[in-house]
Amino acid sequence: MQAVIVLFGALARSANALSQRPFGVLGQYAIGTSKATDPWIPSWTDYIEDVMERWYAPGMAVGVINGSETWLKGFGKASLETSEPVTAHTLFCTGSTTKSFTAASLSLLIDNSSDYSDISWETPISHVLREDFVLSDEWATEHITFEDALCHRTGYPRHDLSILNSTRQLIRSLRYLPLSAEPRTKLQYNNMMYATAGYAIEKLTGLNLASFFHEHLWAPMGMNETFLDIYDPRLVHSGLTAAQSYWAVGNGAYVRNPNLDGRLGADAGAGAVYSNVADYTKYLRVMMAETGPISAAGHRELKRPRTLMGFNSEMFLGPTTETYGLGWMGAVFEGEQIYWHTGTVSTFVTFMLMVPAREYGIVVMANSNSKVRELVTYRVLYDLFGVEQERRPDHEALYLKEAELVQRALDTCPDRLYPNVPNPPLPPSLPLADHAGTYSHPAYGDLFVATDCEDASSNTVDEGCSLRLRRDRDAQQLVVGKLQHKSGDFWLTYAALEELPDLFALMIARESYRFSRSSAAGKSIIETPSTTKSEHIRSYKFGYGVAVTSMTLIAVQDE
Image 1 (spheres, rainbow, N blue to C red):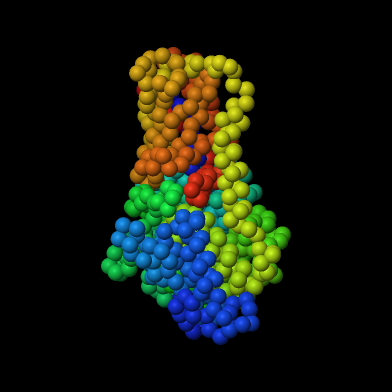
Image 2 (tube, rainbow, N blue to C red):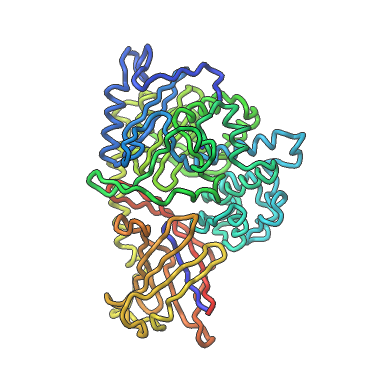
């Protein structure tokens, strides 16, 4: 038996009259000023077009709410192949903003005491999904509640690359995945728990999640251009255009991302919605006015802070505390309570933000994973509040500096992981051929390790002889990497997407690989760390940001 530890760096109708005007028609007063001028032309429009070019976004849609008025506009291309322009009705995958709909749906069930009297935020999930929701920790299995799951305090790290082909498979895989913190002690963002909540809604109601969202949330809110998954039959027959997503490869060039289609079903409750800025501004109006179909109690519960996120992030102009509620983040900005959530799926990005007391709302959607999402949102937010120019952070400079620091961290990572490598390094204890094979894990699936050398019978590792890793998973992007030998049975690697191997490299960090021979003849075994560590690494290339979470995977091969 062989084993290896692998670390993958890896989203109504308003109570107020809704006036949708072309982007550039402001009304009587300019936002943040007392002059009858139009801030959209040239200031916002010019800024957005400029930042899209410099930070690599082929297409973007923006929606802004100011009191009773709503402005919507599209920029750039929904498809570079057809030159289809982005409009206010172009569909984007809105990623983790889906979580707010999953939480809102559960609130509808909790409020329906006649049919679901035994369901509350404090209900342990295992009481609803008894056979499926079995965790790797017995206490967690019996006590983790819907509230715990939706505010990210279950003790589980992301484990995103373990997501399987069906939601039930995903949930049943949790029993094989380790916790990395005590439950209810810290925020650890986890998509799998929102997938679990979505599955619980299906089991309780007998409706698939797409039907429940449409019938009980979206239709009552007038969101007739919002769908769950690209293959939703309503979307297919809607006549609406769905944007394509792209990787930026520098010098204004893009490569179409081939990884998204058909890969969102298993964790639909976490991030599979397709929508547009026209519908999302309707959604923000409902959330700000706290109208139906969500009850007043439901609105309070969704926004109530549960878990501490951090302090004084880049969006804010002074000290503040960020919290996570149920599908919404919250904090105080310039004396006003704000709520927001972002979404990232593949290379689609979304930012939705609302300031209920002032009736401000902002929605930004783009089809390349770059910092345009943040840059445009922050610019509009500061303008709405009339923030003086000298108080505004230079976010572009901050992002470029962050990119330099991250690149330096990646460059020095091998030395930091292995500071005391002997010179010359010790050879592996096993011939390279013995490392090759298919490694399996009940949650993470298969890993394929192959030799890339003329003579794999030796244990000599050089430029002409190496090990390569490939990971297959239908529900995720394919990851490939070259194992880099450090000394003895210690290895590390860089990984990339199989379709785009030259675009960027993601460091596989933290524990790295270790092969060693056990006492049993003909077998090799890996030492298992006592806890699963995770960290967040952000990598940039050509202005493109990649969010990477490293996780520990234990894979076993049967001979």
